[in-house]
Length: 261
Length: 257
Ligand SMILES: Nc1ncnc2c1ncn2[C@@H]1O[C@H](COP(=O)(O)OP(=O)(O)OP(=O)(O)O)[C@@H](O)[C@H]1O
Ligand SMILES: [Mg+2]
Image 1 (cartoon, helix red, strand yellow):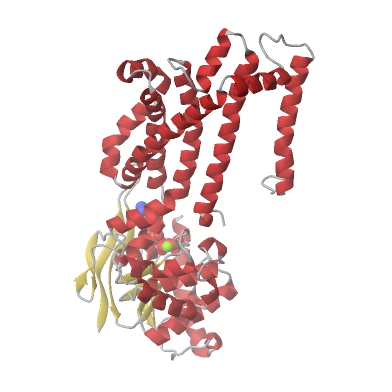
Image 2: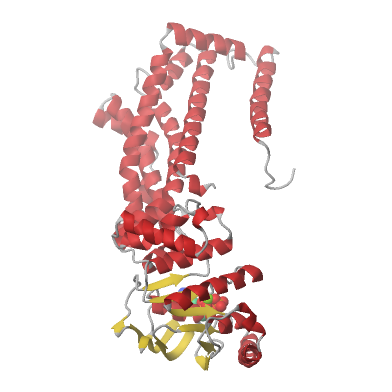
């Protein structure tokens, strides 16, 4: 069943100071199934964030529309949780208060909030940090909290924009496993943007490869590796062949993008 | 010394005191050494003596009290009016477009130039003194608060939107808490300026307050008293600054952690 329909969506940014208008995204149509874990893979500047922001309702498509459960997306809302590449925890709130933010906006009682928060603290392994402020956390802890904050709201889809982009390799793979574990249990529909090929394969049931700017989806690659996945799967032959295939696809785009500049 | 390298609390304290020691030493050297005529500049010892006489014989404590009350009264009035307006201006662009040009203009009107006019309107009572401080502070606070609120990190606002916050939630639970420490810092700054306005207000048409004492002393060429008055202002400013900083640290632990 299709959960999310990106229907002929494109985005042209108006010209800046007499320059030419920037076409960030060519008309794009994608259907995302319920419970799917879809990664969007593409070189820098190809319009990945732009696409995700339009799904979130933070930006408006120039053409086309985004439909979630058949309803047109017009503005941001709690049914589309988002985790940003930059650290966006509210610095004046503790970890627990950050996780409770969406529930509070919904008007859910303090007692219920506390129950949900403690459950999420445990799932992301930060129970001992409930009363810490974001400044007192490492980058990985902050992004874990940001994921919990988005999921505590129980959104219909979770959007992640290179959430682990600023983390070191070790932390990054631990975070991938954590997110995968959460998804394997909850099967929330996830749209995950990355420019890391391994990350895209390891997490996804489907990888969408984007072309260099102006972005469009140039390949739609199903990943049939079985869940639950263990990190050792990264050394399996199927994984390697997928990686080789996607590396080739991305390389072409990177070459194009480099030639343009 | 390396750029931005931190120093210990003790070193900070000692260095801070050291400047005052140098300052007084240079002053004592210039005056007690006979390089400057006492008509123009009293020496530190005379200054302290005059100050003691002021406090014990001339009820200078009352003057200090009345000046403090004027500053705080005018400043609180200004903050009560300006902070909400500034927040609304920063948050809502139509309100900003409506008020910003006028406030920017009014900000440059010197409060001291209003004193003759205010005396006409409000007499020379307490209300007029409060008005001088109010006029001097209110437009500054409005504008600075508006800039702070408008500068709140856009990605925090967007995160709140994707978590289901609506207009009022964004204002009350993102814009205001996010800018609160900077607003408090602005108030601390403006309180410092309010001290200048109150003294000017007391120099003209006043029968009490530190400023009034200073202008009275001028007639008597009592430079010791004048300098004592000026130093008292500085010391009170230092104390209020310290209290303000301590309060900010307590109120917003997250912004320093
Ligand atoms: N607000 C904007 N105004 C004008 N141009 C924009 C704006 N936002 C993005 N663009 C342009 O649109 C293009 C796509 O940007 P986008 O941020 O979606 O890329 P991206 O794929 O997320 O890149 P990265 O991997 O570096 O984050 C870029 O060329 C960028 O310059
Ligand atoms: Mg991006």
